[in-house]
Structure formats: C-alpha cells, structure tokens
Amino acid sequence: MRTVTLLYHDLVNGDPDASGFPGGGPARYKLSEAEFVRHLDALAAARADAPVRVGESPAAGPSRMPWLLTFDDGGASARRTAELLERRGWRGHFFVTVGRIGTRGFVASEDVRTLRRAGHVVGSHSFSHPDPMSGCPPDVLAEEWGRSRKELEQILGEPVTAASVPGGSYSGSVGRAAAAAGFRALFTSEPVTREAEIDRCRVLGRFTLWRGVPPEVAAALVSARLGPRLSQFLAWNARKAGKRVGGSYYLRLRRAVLERRLRRTGRSPRAGGG
Image (cartoon, rainbow, N blue to C red):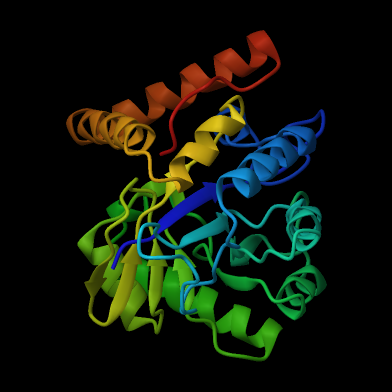
C-alpha cells in the first residue's frame, strides 16, 4: 500500500521556544500560524478529499494516494493547530513526547484529552525523545516505547496504537521494539510513500515541511507530481549517509551550525527534515 504523509511540528509567532523543544535545531521545523494557514490553503486547493487517519479506508480515487497529516513533539501549539484543521473538517495525528507532558512549552494532560475528543489520533513520540533513538540499546528502546504507551493510555483511557520516531532515527531495532510495545502503526521521517511492515506493525514514511518551505511544495507533495517527493528523498538519503559516516561528530556539528545561524539571523535556516 502507498500513502503520502506530511510531517509538521509546532506553530510559533515570535519566540521559537514558545512551543516544543528549544534551540536552533528544533526551531527550523516551526512555522508561524500565518505560514501554516497558507500551507492548509494550498493543500485544500490540491486535494478535494480530506486527509485520512491511519487505519481508515481512503477516500482517494485510484489515481491518487490517500494522504495524512502528522505533527510531532507535542508542543503547546498542538491545540491551536488542531483548531485550524477542524475548521476545514480535517483531522490529524499528534505524536506526543510523553515525558514532557505538562512541562513548559508542551501540552498538558487535558490538552491531550481534548485532541482525542475532537477526533484526532494521539500517539507516542517516545518518552524522552532520545537522540539518536537508533543508538539506544534494546532495554532503553523497550522503556521508551513501553512507558510512553502506558502513560498515554492512562491519560486517554483507551489503547494507543500509533507512534512516530523522534529525530527521524529509525532502525530495525527501533521498529521491533515499537511493535513489541503494542504499536501497530509507526511513522518515520523517511520520505517514501510505500509502506512496510515489521512484526505486524505498519511502518509509514513522511515528507517533512519546515519553516520557509513554500505552500506550493506542500501541495505538490500530496498531488500526483513525482519531482518534489524525489527531491526530498535524494536530500534525505544524502544526510543519512553523512550521519552514518560522521556519527556523533556529524550530529554535534550540525547542531552547532543551526544554533549559530539562529543566533545570527533570529530565525531558523531552510533545511530538510531529519
């Protein structure tokens, strides 16, 4: 099966640390509300069908893949994001860093329940957002997925079966641990449309949208045009190779560069998701 899934994060107006994780790295994924509304307008113009939720039967015709909207981290702006979707009759997927619930810049327990009551999918984004998650030993992976699912289910009072991988750091061990914890749908940051499966858990890729990306790019990603998807796929694989070769040095250097740019410009640089 093929699906096209878009990945967004927080909405901020002014202070980039007002919602979600602080710092230059996370800031580049945060759109202003006005910018996000322009993205929604472009998506609505590109697709007459509404985005689906994981597990739903798609309404798209044979010439178009079903599309989904996802939002990572669980920043405080999630409820405002949900309201903007609901105005259009749309629903999305909100993946929450469970260990951050109720802390500064993140959703509270009641926000999580409000999102779910409104019909959005609420899932885990791990417990502590380890970086990189693929470098965690098996016992830590089991704790990250198992604890996050258990605590989120206690808040919601219902099973939680969807999750997303923090930092785009997916590996077979990450997927198997998520499946063992009871998740049946796991979203990565790999920009692909073809789904995979690991231990009865669906693995779905996503295309990342960050600050400064034109709304037309978002629209093109959910349309039948191959070029924008291919461009992001090639860029993502180039970064993946850099991470593999450079290891922790690559991650530290990348983080330092982003922080320096943020301090110099007061805004996040244009870059791909990772």
